[in-house]
Length: 243
Length: 243
Image 1 (cartoon, rainbow over the protein chains, first blue to last red):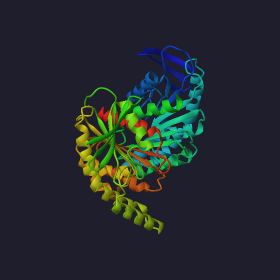
Image 2 (tube, helix red, strand yellow; image 1 turned 30 degrees about the horizontal axis):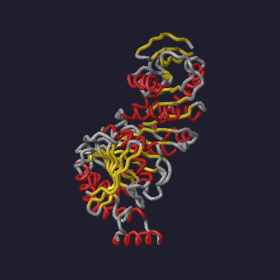
Image 3 (cartoon, rainbow over the protein chains, first blue to last red; image 1 turned 60 degrees about the vertical axis):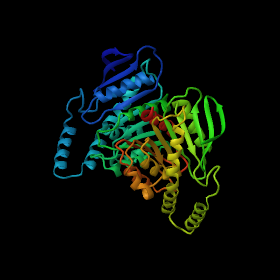
């Protein structure tokens, strides 16, 4: 793990790093080196480790909860090179959707393909980051919606260090089987008028989690319209389960 | 409005009152007489103004938010005499359910009947309580699930002073039409495995609210299993909209 920058603002230290082929960002509270909860943020499609929404969320988790936060770039995003196979598939899918195909199954298949790579990558990111003095082996949370849900469900299912997850804007098509292996508390965000994920598919994914504590937060609006107060809710959820 | 008792504990003043035929309880913060937000609590079936869940919720709204809280007894509940017509109907419904009838339509019809009486009663309670120096004409919220939802939807639809409502554990059968007249923010609680309200009916009631801000919180479990953290959520919801 190689750090490329190390800066600080408003009590939040930000280090960009490269771990093998994976570029990522790590945020920690300035100061004391002690073990603390760690949240891994999975960004959305077309976003990256320092997209405004990711950055804002990371800063709040550090400043308000005292957690460490890490966000890796997904292959083909941020500082990573174009991934030819994914790129070809995405272009082909776009053409099929324009020709009238249902987007949901194509998206689900694509997420499942990418997850076969990101699950081991993210596990190695946890390994590396938890070796740092100011992160340590505390409880881990996961936050990711949309692409971050498609990749997050298999990650949370596979990684026993994850003790609580905020997921959402995803459907059951690709991930119901893995969701059924998730038993940690889940807060699941659903947009009632999501133009990309059919409502029934979102409800079915919520249904699929084996967690005894899972809570569905549904709000009106389209895929991109998750209300700001859900970030407050997510912070409280993580505080309750990791804090 | 006649007060029958006036006590105080842990900074929360409790006054029991009778307004015409309506017995009720009013909780306010000890001390300063100034206008403040007021939450009307509608209790559940078989409960009353001082049922443990109602009391606990009232104390938190006063102590943590500084609000005033009022809870009237529903006819046939608490300190009110048995209401012969309702009682006869409830007994007849119980017999029909035992003979295999669907409970939801019977319950919905019953709630609609009782609401024709409680809506004007609760409006007169607001009138009386808001005349007090330590309540005043601040913004009003409504909290009620189950019976409190069946009676609350028509109340919130009819009463322009209500600016935010927590509702839930109710279905669309009786109240979809009135729900469509509600435009204030709504937090709606749904139990995923509710044995009394079919899931689709609960989702349909959430769908029916005309509010641009409405948020559905669904949790696993039966009718009576709403998790304790939803009370925290309701407090924050009221603080956001009335505070």
